[in-house]
Amino acid sequence: MKIGKLHFKQGIILLALVSKAVVLSSQDKTAQYILTQYADDYQKDVALTKDVIFGIQVDTTFWHIKAKARTENTTASVTLIKGKPGLPTYYFKTDLGTLKRIHNGEINALTASAKEFSTDVAPFDVETMKGFQPNENFVNDLFSVYFHFWTRGFPERIPFGLDYTRFTHGAQASVFYYQEGFRSAYFALKKGQHANKDERSKRNPFPSLFIAIKGQGTMIINGTTSRLSAGEAILIPAGVSHEFYNDHDEPFEGFLFMFGKGA
Image (tube, rainbow, N blue to C red; front, side, top):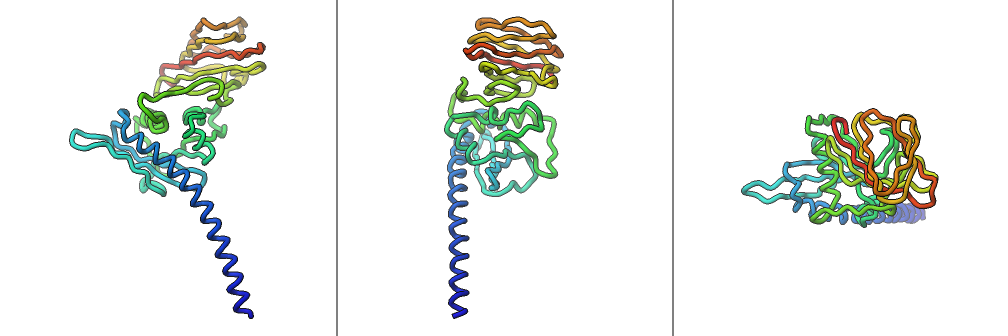
């Protein structure tokens, strides 16, 4: 009788472990399906000009990408492998829900990574493995992968508008493209929103070009208050204080380009 009870308990424990494994397997299968589509697309990308290995952590599961650029004698190859990279490198960190949103075109990876301050938490981020030593080209190499791996199709289309934004810097924003010395984004201020209200966000060590395309907002540039309306553009020189707010019912929308050393 004791043996029967023991077997019964072991059976219950085994069933619980199997059930848990099925759930985890289903999550990994979904992530694998999505990541495989990005890997297949990246293999055809004209921007894949150098070999690269990087990791991807989806919830608690690690994957890594091994990409080999095309040469005169070989075609490009991109392989998705479950587990951490064998050598220390950088990795993208996200959750399955965010990965699905990126896959479905609801948000792009750069927008999902947007932060006002480095201590902020974003649903999609980049971290480095212990022992990783970035080289002098790391920033450009990272941004190239950030955009071209996580943007499918050719040409690579970037939808924008209020529906594709996240709240950051006191406003709504969606990122177009980054590379060293250049940043580009769409912005929108809903009624009551105040961009760069925090004193730490008001100045950049590089120029910024704001182009208004819809509505109007109030801007405070080096303490001077005025309006910026659709059809106008302003250049904010490096080091100049700037903030914007909207007290109208209609959203204030535009494009933002930041450039120069440090951008």
